[in-house]
Picture 1 (cartoon, rainbow, N blue to C red):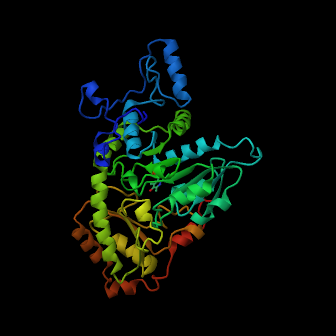
Picture 2 (cartoon, rainbow, N blue to C red):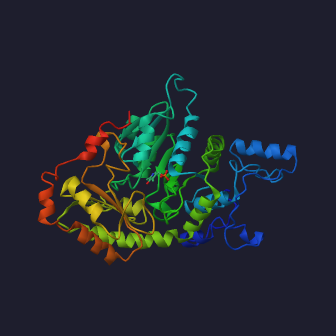
Length: 430
Ligand SMILES: *Cc1c(COP(=O)(O)O)cnc(C)c1O
């Protein structure tokens, strides 16, 4: 479903979040989102069914006379979620996938097809990737698994890294896990005619709309803030209708479809997304501020904590978000103590849910990243949830408190030990 023919142009974000993608419910005579679990659909006749099949296999929509045919090609519950997300991202269309990584894979595969006719056919398609990135994305690109080569670089090195056969530029802002901000417009300017994909998982459409800044695709791991309750895995890409066609074609062929039950939960999550993000952000600002004053904390990574010298919080974002990372003075041992001492925070990967999570990126989410780009062993990432902020700060205070001398004595030299780096030296990344 595209958002072009919808008349939500005058609505504000909070209203679009509640109503987007639900335009056909009144005509259907229902109030809640209908959950269609059909794997197949009755065909009117061979000819019309076949024409609709062909339309969808090429990335188009089902034809009204032919129907949805088969659930790998189209599902109305998924299409409603896509429409709601597209409207929030101020994009023409959106395409949903089984996970954030399935979405990233489809974006890379769809871009491969765009290799310029002038490019040397003997060379592989090439992607430029601005680090830091989510560990899974870094791993996917570094592995070469999809038949594309990747150059990793910093924001200011993009123009120099683009080649004749470059088909895509990937960036993340705020970046996972250091919350570094990348100037989207700056990368778009360096990209020339190469499409730029922004992983918008951390900012959400509430705080940032990459399409409005010239990006071709805004990708979400919908597993995180979009769903917001830690009970649905999914991915989605907002883009133009033309790009959506190429993504739907890859989805139809490879089968990385989002299950309608997941789409139902993710769409339901959209309604509260602005309220959740704002409330979680309000607490994150206070947690980050409190952490700045703790002796056990060497550095707080939070958008704006460096004074925002380029004004990106003014020009690019509408807020600082609810993810905070900290570098601990006590090194890896302190990270180990903190993650096992928290009581309200859950020691778990993932982020963006109503409950607060804490995890160690170097050991977990960013384990597959090449050693030179892997997060430091003293870095811990917090996802601030909807609990009372005083309770969260009290929990961190008790977990950060110096350990008793008896425990200190039990682990001599543990401040410098770095088992993660040792274990990951034989990681699978080539
Ligand atoms: C989790 C995450 C992904 C991957 O999404 P999945 O839904 O886990 O496949 C991609 N990018 C970012 C920034 C993430 O946090």
